[in-house]
Image (tube, rainbow, N blue to C red):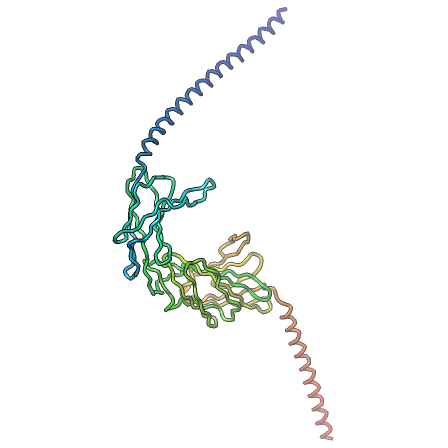
Length: 363
């Protein structure tokens, strides 16, 4: 009986402890909920009040000027200026939110956007069209408390100072073919001047390797067309280079004999901006002027990359091997060997016949 009472006491004690713990847990949860509600009201209510006050103060003025070059024939007055807005999509991509407003320039190219609604999470840009081409300002952002933003749209002039174009990068992408290699050259030019540079009167010159075949200029997405003239291995490019960077891409084929060839490319600048790329496990490159710089992935293809060593010379020479050889080359070698054998046999019999005739005369 005593043992039974002890068991009952133990059970009752355990139930009491569990009930007390449950009671304390419920009290703690109620306190947490109460604290959360108080915190929520403390945060949300002031934010709602400040949002209401901010909505009345979130409008500002954006003004500036369309500045034309001194040699421009178009008047800066009466041009359409558009205020563009850019926002981040849920995927994290920058997407245009469309024109926010449109005004016309006044005297001297001045313009003004009034009562622009602020969005501190968006980017803005001004754009206009002059002589059929689009020009824009730098992207700007609004700050809390701002009432005025001033930014200009600079319309560059046109210069013929080709020497001010700087080559910032040259990439030679070499891919193997059957009995030949395909070379894709990617050139990046920088125009750091205030004007566009026109090379139509003084073309930009590139000296390509001798013996190139099937040259083609890759499509350009630029507004103005790119004209080129190829005379043997000298490429002349006529183009209006805008301010900033411009990329030019062209491609050609170089024949290889019995799995190898040598490329000699001459540049108008030092070799420190030149790189060579080949697909991995395809071609083999050898040159004292190149140093291996690692692997790079591009469009699911891994390339081996080489960097040109600094040198006073502007000529890059390197040998390529492991090019797949066509059967025609081997057939040509076979024909040459057969011709040589036939010529040797004919010469042998002619000499033998001549010697017999000499012996008959001697007798």
